[in-house]
Image (cartoon, rainbow, N blue to C red):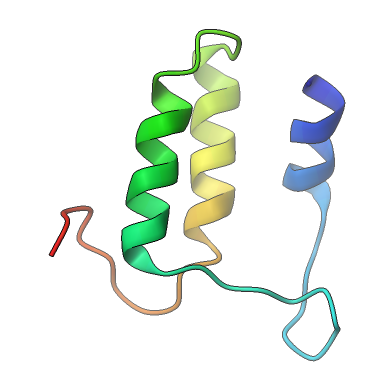
Length: 66
């Protein structure tokens, strides 16, 4: 699991590449809640993964469901 987390954290995706992707604010909120409840990850890993996924959300995201 740690290797997957590191791969996601260290990967750099640019919008011009076929690997560039984004997620909606609502999806990020849902995934960040799921990550926070995952007992297999330590706190620092959870925060790094949530921050990485947040970087894939274009624009502002207040962190509340609409």
